[in-house]
Length: 438
Image (cartoon, rainbow, N blue to C red; front, side, top):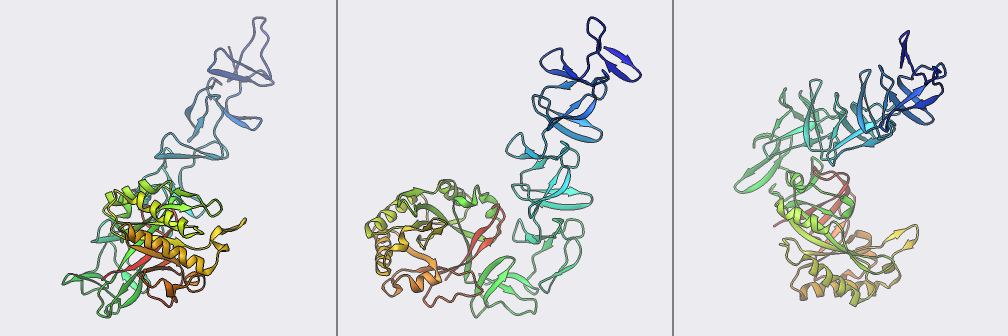
């Protein structure tokens, strides 16, 4: 090695300087000698790859490691190449985003419509539900590291927090939907209103909601993202129910249990729209076990594509088999609707209205024979136009209609009013339902 005028050079045994080439002295080191013979130091590109050569020695370490340089952090693979334009992680609960220049992203940022926080020192994005303190503000992330925004969150029935559009908790007086809130100036905690103020309260074993004008809520009312039903005396006569399947991915049921959700209808199985094969939902067992363990009431549903009464009975037997051993406190639901994608309609589209009616009756009767309580699920237009509901009056109905009211003319025990619900513990959209209680 030759040190000269702040640069480093390396000569061969004849005194000739190495130029325009790599040299190395072992498997895990490498040096790039430039055109004038000096070793390259700092950050540089070779083709599409970016590298870091030690700022003092010029050594490129061929090992997976963090690199601290000029106030930034970089991570190289085992060939010394810096990760760029991608996520990297070292376990289930951490994540890092490496930018175009190879440096780790730090602070707040958006991916799509979701906002995240990467540790200001390390760049780590922690995938866990937690409070984040930064620059005098407080934020709360879900189990995927996404910050809650434009919504209330709560961890008990006594208080809640409002997360603003940037994800920080509101800590000054604000008005939302004509209701005034006064959060704690340090923590952002908002105490649930007592009986004489706007909000929920209990009296004589019943639950009520007082409006901002002092009146009791009656009929249907939307409260903090969920729909409720109150009788003429203001007594709550409904519960919040979600329905889930593999499309909600892994659910944190302990977090769901902290929300107004009291029950879940879990897809146990489905029939292939083309194949007619009955398939167990891949997330069924973890969902039903997790919900029960968290103290959430459960029911199960099967997505039907039966085209004969025998197939319908087989679907009923399958859902009954899968529910055996679990404490179901809700009925067994038959999801009957049309399937349609770019390939066309599912198999039950091509049978007659009477055949569809017979299939539903066969499913429900088989559930009853096996000792269960069946319920029919579908959307309003299907119930009124694609089957003969007059022949199915003995079976309760759970109706789907994404509208401010239900226009289905028959009686129903539950209303699926949204497919875009947001619930703590679930990353993404989930179906929301109102089920009537006695």
